[in-house]
Amino acid sequence: HQQNLDFTRVWIPDPEEVWKGAEIIKDYKEGDPVLHLKLEDETTLEYQVGPNQNPLPFLRNPDILVGENDLTALSYLHEPAVLHNLRVRFLESNHIYTYCGIVLVAINPYEPLQIYGEEVINAYSGQNMGDMDPHIFAVAEEAYKQMARDERNQSIIVSGESGAGKTVSAKYAMRFFATVGGSSTDTSVEEKVLASSPIMEAIGNAKTTRNDNSSRFGKYIQIGFSRHYHIIGANMRTYLLEKSRVVFQAEEERNYHIFYQLCASASLPEFQDLGLTSAEDFTYTSLGENIFIEGVNDAEDFCKTREAFTLLGIKDSSQSSIFRIVASILHLGNIQICSERDGESCHILSFCKLLGVELQQMEHWLCHRKLVTASETYVKSMGAKQAVNARDALAKHIYARLFDWIVEHINKALHTSSKQHSFIGVLDIYGFETFEVNSFEQFCINYANEKLQQQFNSHVFKLEQEEYMKELIPWTLIDFHDNQPCIDLIEARLGILDLLDEECKVPKGTDQNWAQKLYKQHSNSAHFQKPRMSNISFIVIHFADKVEYQCDGFLEKNRDTVYEEQINILKASQVGTRILLSFHSDEEQICCEESPNPNMKGWNRCSSPSWWIS
Ligand SMILES: Nc1ncnc2c1ncn2[C@@H]1O[C@H](COP(=O)(O)OP(=O)(O)O)[C@@H](O)[C@H]1O
Ligand SMILES: *[C@@H]1O[C@H](CO)[C@@H](O)[C@H](O)[C@H]1NC(C)=O
Ligand SMILES: *[C@@H]1O[C@H](CO)[C@@H](O)[C@H](O)[C@H]1NC(C)=O
Ligand SMILES: *[C@@H]1O[C@H](CO)[C@@H](O)[C@H](O)[C@H]1NC(C)=O
Ligand SMILES: [Mg+2]
Image: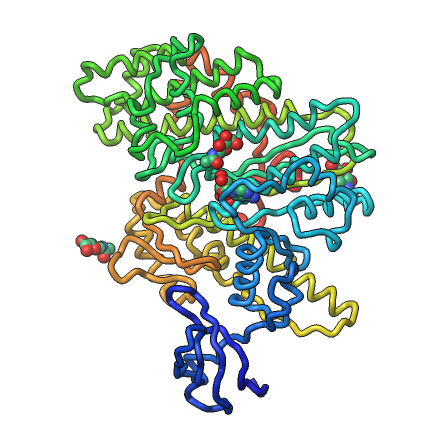
């Protein structure tokens, strides 16, 4: 602050442009209450500065530095400097990629660019990261090279808010590995690895108001390499599918693509017995009130999904079971419960026929619940609302089972029996998101992103700084934004999750009571707020944004109860049993042991010791 600020250029906050450039036109001495500025449109402004509320504005970088392909080359590195540099590169030179040290920053161009062809892959292959224009292929090449040269396994983490371009970037990274790590003898392995994408997008992606192709699950793919660094197989792990979407979509949103793909192909001869019509006719596909996505042809995409299934060696008979199950979910959603059923009975019939369940049993289950007490078991009929909830719970359960089964089979198809020498992992999760109404799903997604951001911080700042200090390189410590306090608010003892779990155990626990406990416990927390106008929602100040969550439904979704009756229906099924129950009988069941770490309450250790899944 001692430096001579006259004729220096600064950035001032602006409600519309976010940051606006300005020039200081009068000498400023420490303690002066105003700064005399001239804006770019030549108007002048007396800008209030004070020791407490209005700090001195950020300094602009000299023009000569702007447009650098590595942000760390800038003299001043702060939000306006970063944004301005990225903007200049994008608008003036059409560059979407910029480095920030070892991190690649990508801007979503929202239009196809001719920078991902095979010739570009070949151009990046074997090059040094610093010698080439920033590119996702340069990052992939760096991982490949370090794996081979340093004999170290690698991982690429893709992060960013929903719609930022994570899944597209992850796909390009995988395409790079498939090309440079292609085996000369067996080309089908890398093709199979790439074929997993359209399948996962069909069953795990959906249109939201932020992204037409939004991933509603997280995935981590490990590509396995031989000692000659050729791809020999792959393995995928998925995280927390948004099950609620199967039975509910907000306006202008859609269910998972696969439902619309199948409906768009309903007239094909092989699907006559599915009893499907337009997606508009089914409750579960029409709640968003728009079944179309501009520029997307669901029938064509369905062909790609089927081709990918076939390429991965999923047998025709299994594929037809998959489609039967998808169709059965749509019929299930159209079943009118415990009211007059005239005209609607065709859907319960279709459901029973498709899954091979007895009609009587199904009718009974849909309207009755078994209650087990210490001394006896009795059967009670449910109210209409309860029954609708139970029906929706069954639909969600079936879809989640189907999803897991498909993932398991993709993994079988990508599995290699030969010894894996090394691997490169690619993590692509659901991005930070905030909607008009935010619920348990957004809370989990944003919590995951908060953890990922911490990983990023610790990697980029903490580790980097330790490295500099070890090497005795002069370096001023960057005061980075540590998000540990926000993570503590969520996961520490008596944190949001802890109180939620507690409330789920209380016999008469409710979303309202939980909200009151949150207010009581966290009203003084810097990252927590009670909204002024509501007593059933709470605000978390995340690293990326402030988000208001509606408490409604949190307890139910957190409990995620699967009723015995649901399982019994599926057990009775003649068709889907293999798929829908495989996880109960299979020795491949993966979750077995609960984490001993109090911070990972509710997480389970899986067969491979390095993995914890929730
Ligand atoms: N590199 C890119 N080039 C062109 N379009 C892109 C690129 N990255 C993203 N997009 C566009 O943005 C959309 C959203 O990207 P996606 O990867 O699905 O976002 P995220 O996974 O971060 O939510 C894509 O469907 C595509 O239309
Ligand atoms: C979403 O992904 C699928 C599969 O890759 C693709 O066919 C479709 O065009 C994508 N949709 C959009 C809107 O980008
Ligand atoms: C890399 O992962 C493989 C398993 O895929 C393992 O056998 C190997 O020891 C790992 N290498 C290092 C250096 O950790
Ligand atoms: C929350 O607000 C509603 C209406 O404003 C009120 O009826 C209810 O009693 C309040 N609940 C609590 C726990 O304060
Ligand atoms: Mg995505």
